[in-house]
Amino acid sequence: MFINELPDECLLIIFGSINELDDLVHCYLVCSKWSHLIAERTRKVKYLVEYRWNGDNAPNYTLDYVYYLAEEPLDTTCLSTLFPNLIIADFSGFLSKVKHEAIVTLVKRMKSLKGLINHCCYYEGDESIFQYCDGLEMVSNDHIEPCIKENGVNIKQLHLVRYNLDRFREDAHYFPNLQKLYIYNNEGSPDRYYDGPILEELKIVELSLSSYDGTDIYYGFQFMDSCPNLQSAHIKLDSNSIFVNESLKHKSLQDLVLSFYDQDYTDIFEWDELKRLFMKYPNLKHLVLCDNRRLEDEHIEQLVRILPNLVLFAVRECPRVTQEAANFVQDYNKLYGRSIKFYFKENYHEIQSDWPQLSTKCEKISQGFDFMKHCFLKDFGKLSTFLISSDD
Image (cartoon, rainbow, N blue to C red; front, side, top):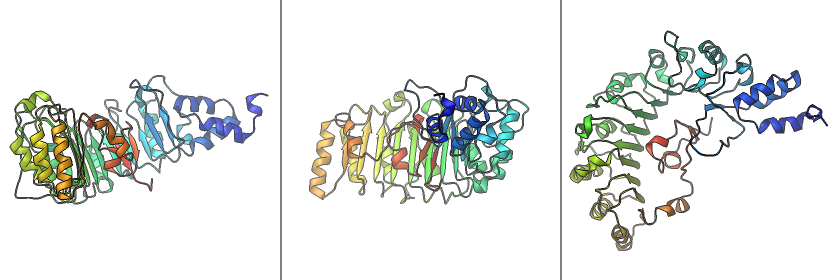
């Protein structure tokens, strides 16, 4: 039997196992019958993402995903026909496959588009594709373009990788409904005091800010004071000097991941500043401290006393934290009727069996607007670009 003699139902099952864009396009071009069936299959696709091999096996995506490899050029004439229901498109590596004009044509026809990832996807002199996307709720880009600001009232998630807190201070008023903010400052210029608008809706913040050789004051926590309803934060800290407003308690923050960018900076370990910082967060429940070789058992003991609502406390790559700290937490639980789960180098492997709902999967798009599930156990460089609500 020839493959084309198979019933349509069988062919659809076969095509449903294909998630690579080039393969789908090549199948679409075989004949009119395959064109119809491939279009049926791709109508279910919600997410188009670039895949970059990181040493793992080939990606295992579900039916609503299609991925592409930024290698061979691609026939683009059928793309808007194949993907009428895309919710998120990742064009970061698309220019190696298609022309800018083809991307613009595709975007104009995608009325369902809510999220766009577009790092370095432009030619000099070309118009921004963001100007054709006035319904976006999620944006991942190198910076904030003017047309993004025009649509700012609709945007709930911003993911910025060549940007800094100083620039966001000037732009923040464009985004009154922002719920998740990611800023990675790789520009080399230090971030300064934030005196921008209050961000009432912001629930999740992920910051890797910058200072000159770790000696400048870090203002990320001061920025968080302008987010009164912030629940979760993932912070990469590259300075020993942090700005702390002790008079202002932040009662909404429940989840915090704090990693130290360069271990050389932690040789001058300002514990008193960090201690004052944690006293600002009386309702903190979940805490991870990473990559601090100066953190010791006595610091763990103090934090347990400072944070009355702590239930999950983990330290990673902190070699001076020993079994003595774990013994203290166990005794403290018995003495005060607490139930703090503490993890360090000796028992860190148990955290995933104890908390199976917490993911370590590296992915651009995660299902569920849930920091604990998708961010808490991940390094900063592996955080998801967008967290998708169940409605999407």
